Image: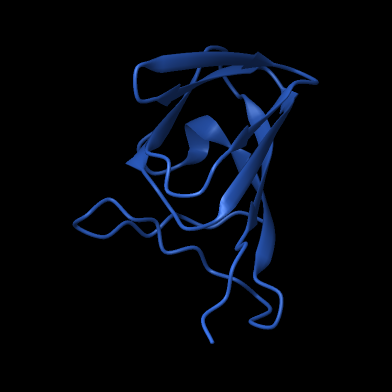
Amino acid sequence: MYSEIIVTDTREELVQYPNQQWKHVVLYTVLNQTRFGYIPLHWHKALQFIYVIEGALDVAMSELNVPLKQGEGLFINSNTVHEITEQDHDTKFYCWNIETYRSI
């Protein structure tokens, strides 16, 4: 499942969850088919796990750049500003967003 990300003026991504009781979603993304051809600088409340299915990409976080290739993954902590760009054309990856807390 893939849908365009919704980003506010503060660069917060508003993650769309199909189930409000357990807020998590697995998104399938072909990076060059996104609106800008990459995932622009953003952050979200969710913990995120990225797993590269095909190709290679770069995840930029603060002053750190993490290259990932097919078969590799990366956890991104909640509230971490990051951007995802591809190294290889037609890079495909899964993105699992998990909201790790809930308001009472």
